[in-house]
Image (cartoon, rainbow, N blue to C red; front, side, top):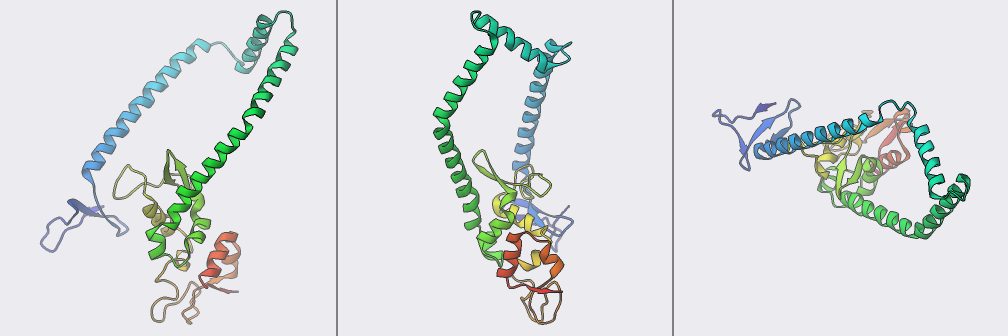
Length: 251
């Protein structure tokens, strides 16, 4: 990427930040202070990870010579059964343990279900709410937020109370304007839509917009089009989105 210069050769500044132009033409204001802080934080995290790894390696040395950890663990549990209840055979001890575990699980099953329900509701509010409140979806997409969520909802997860976006390869989407930080919802949606193969059918101002504009099939009537094979390759949610957008199917 390169610094953006004005006609006098001066660096273009936006909100006190120098503006850079990426190879794809995308222009972003570079937050140098935020980037330095992020690098410092990541260096600290890397040091912490290394120290934990060294501690784990040291602890594992005490298990040298144990070829089958599972068998060793089972043998220790059997011996403990005999030590805990010498008047009861190991099989009975294990049975009592399993019954106790089952009783505890049954007792707290409603609590766990309530926790899972609350977690699901939180995810729905945070992720689903991000779609309904999205300025990008409202201003840039030709489909309603619920269809956008049906198509792109699986790309978002709730982590530490924050909505985090991932691409189809499972990689986190990072911000262009704040390097090292994960992309906020609207920026992540813009990135996902940019890489969506049928983005022209869901973006406003494409397909049937403008004078003489044509869709993917170029019928000349101004209507957005898609081939039947392309349509059948889409998921049910994507097919619904295409239908709502008024896309015509051609053979």
